[in-house]
Length: 333
Image (cartoon, rainbow, N blue to C red; front, side, top):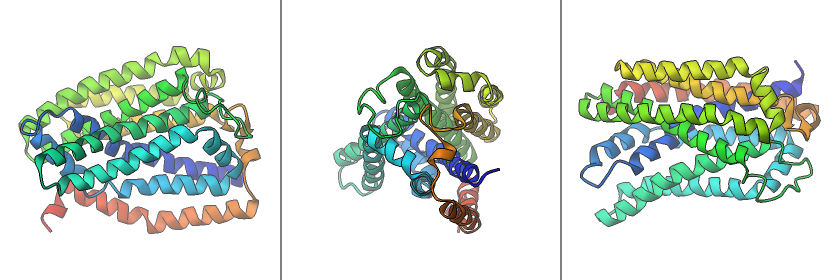
C-alpha cells in the first residue's frame, strides 16, 4: 500500500464516522421539525435534547479531522473542490452554525415564541446542512469538479446526481436518528413515544430504500464513471447496505431497536464506503487521482503519525462518552 493511499483511507475513515455519528445527530432535526405543536411535541423534543445533548459537539470532531486531512494531504484537490463548490459548502457551513445556535438558545429562551423560533432554526438547519454536504459529494462523484477549480458554480451541484445525493443524505440521517431515538426512548421506558418513533422510522426507512434504489437509473445516465464503480467493485457494499437496511426495518418491526441501530449503521456506512470504492482511484472523478493529488511524502507520513496519535488520544474518550450516554449512566452520576 502506498503512503498516499494510506492517508486517503485514514481520511475516508473519518468521513464514514462523520456520516454515521454526525448523520444521526443531523437526522434528529427531522423528528423535531415534524413533532407537532409545543404541547404535542414536547416529549419528543425533550427526548431529542436528552439524546444528542451530550454528544452533538463531539460529533463534529470528525468533520474537522476530515477537512484537515484533506487540505494537508491532498491540497490541489481540496482547493479545486472548495473553489468550484463554494456555494453548497458555505450553505452547509451556515446550516451547521445556525443549527448549533438554535439548539443552544432554545433551552434558554425566556418565552415560548422565542423557543419556537430557535427550535425551527435548529430543525431546519439540521436538514439543510446534510443536504448541501450531499450535493457537494455528488458533484465530486459525478466528475463536475475540474482539477483547476474553475467548474461552474451552479451546475456543478445543481444536477441529477448531486440533488439525489443530497436527498439520500438527508434520508439516511433521518433513518439513523430514528433508530437511535427509538432505542433511547425504549431504554428510558417511554413506551408510547418509542412506538410513535418506531412507526415514523419505518416509514423513513422505506422512503430511504426507494431513494437509494431509484437513484441508480439517473446516476447511470448522469455519472458514468461512478455508475460503473457502483455496479462493479462497489456492488458487494451496495448489497450489504440493502441487506442492512432491510434487517434494521425487520428489527424495528419486531421491537428490537437496540439491535436495529447496528443494522442501520451498517447500512449507512456501507453506502458511504461504496461511494468511495466506486470512485477509486479518483480523488476528483475523471480529473485527478489520489496519487496525483497527494502532497509531499514527508507531509503524508506526518499525517499518518498524527492520525495514529489521534486514534490513541481521541477515540477512547469518545467511546467512553457514547458508553455513558447509551447506558444512561451520565444521568445518575
